Length: 136
Image (cartoon, rainbow, N blue to C red; front, side, top):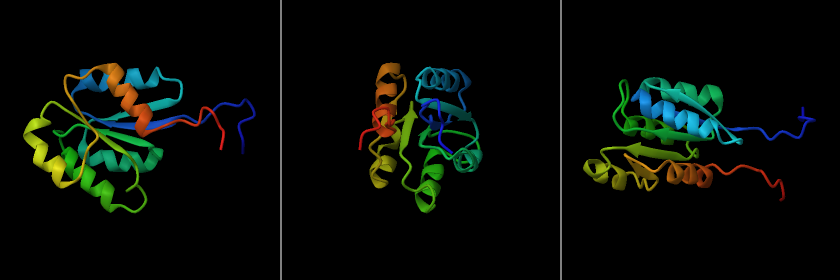
């Protein structure tokens, strides 16, 4: 059924981040954007389940998390036919030490901590564009 108010369905962003202050900052900043709704998951093992449940449009991942690390989550996302095309953005303080892991997986969407919030939000908009115009 169509929404008669003309509201655009929000894009859902799942944030896999176990550092609570950073997770809260990311969630609140993304939720301040009208077209997005963010959900935080602090355990890597629960990220995949959450992505499927909320039909995520974008996944933001830290590398070091309890459960599964970010690369293990990424590998499982890419191996899953239902969600393999979902964009994934890595946000990590350890980007330099994991450069070979990024290269091996052809991962180019990486932001290093500390990050500029405006840069991160701009990357979210690029990876997960909204249909604000509605023109085909």
